[in-house]
Image (cartoon, rainbow, N blue to C red):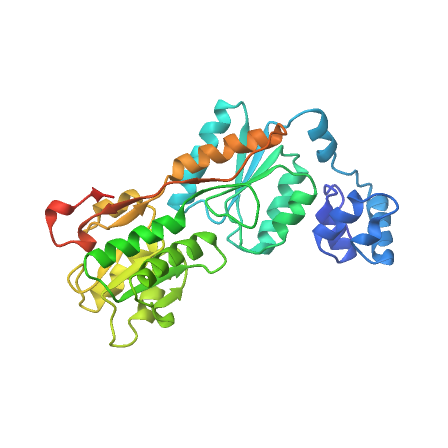
Length: 348
């Protein structure tokens, strides 16, 4: 065995020794004595169990602990805590946790599935009473695996499958944007859609698409660009959209930071906002109002989402039945879609 002396023996230790994924080790070691082969070939399952015994591994008693007493520790996984939106969501989570006598700790997955798995196993080894995921990917079986292990979980900001979640009604938010742009005569919209695996991207984009479709306008596929939610992603997406001389008359970015990146590209090309191109973001971060051209955006209830997610997780941990919740967005109209100063900060 090549294990460093004094190193704690964890599921990952065994996985590295055997050469399998940590989730395979977890499944084999938590399976019944007669059923480990459901998760691995018989020889692999035997090797995992023998390695665990030889290393002196003691199985995490997480599941039995939950049956007898609730842990007061909650794990939170987000893509990037440096993101203002996610940081605000986490503030709501932490605030509600304190009120409920719970402690939280947060880690970043960088929106990578492998990191999400690793961070989750780390948290489970610390015997958290439940998990809040802010980095859910659409159609990712990982969340189903966690649920099958009996771990109380709630998703926040994004939804996935039938998992319990607290989100903004992002489809409605997208429709509000589409209807607003149509109302001010902008019929050639382009969309900086964010990351394709995130429900926030898909729902906000679909809301705009449907609003335009209802008005008899199909948005060309080449005017829907998936890129990062940050300023760099917005810049890259805007450059792709403006690569031809057939400029749109409006751009909707599914994140305010992406809108800021797009604004830089428009400036560099000598295009003015909103005269040449109207610009809309999403989330209503504080910077949106303070920009040289104040940004029209959709206000999402970020802090409230965090609070509700923690409160809902407490109910799940207590064995209560809960249902997913969607909170209402609000359109905030500012100068980036209006040449009339009197319309700044109008809401709808």
